Amino acid sequence: MAEVGDAPETGVQSGEMTPQRYMESRLTQYQEWYDSKATRMKAMHLRMRTVSVVGGAFVPVFVNLDLVFARVTATVLSVVVVAAVSLESVYRYREQWKNYRSTEQLLGHERVYFETKVGPYQNLSKREAFSVLVARVEKAIANENSATLNVMTLGGQVNADVQQHGIPAARQNPDPDPNPNPEP
Image (tube, rainbow, N blue to C red; front, side, top):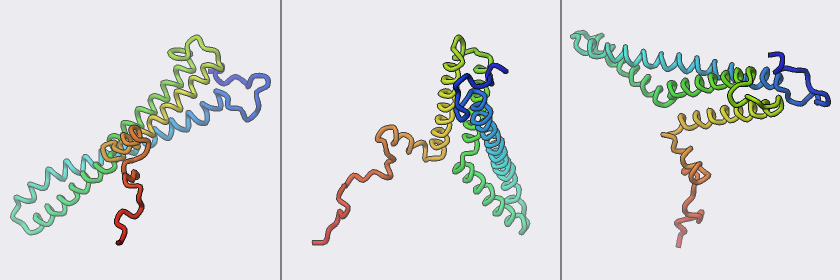
């Protein structure tokens, strides 16, 4: 590991990004952030699933009881289950959890590959290996950002529109005339 964080080469400016500085700041920062977000999204996903499964199992029980409180309880429980399922479908906690965790793991693998000089870093000079590390880490971060945007939009429609047309469909104006119905 000492090799990764070698003192700056002769002539390196104090503000220049070194492998050690990059790994301590940017890479570690993102790994911790993705780990934290993955943990939270997993917890939210499991909570929502638990509420919907357990609540869904109890609704028929309460419906079949011939007691006043049972009908009210079944109704309230049904609303809670619908809310949990709806929130899960809007926020897509499971997909976010998977995106964040896979990106965090990918960043960890890149760190190990770089430090041990294997995989894409094998037989590269320190400067070349650092350039490859930065490019691969930044690409992984950008890919995760794109994946999250895709997950959080309606079926990835915005992402598909951007790739095909360069702008989202909702912003396209097929009629360039700002006043389509002028008064005679």
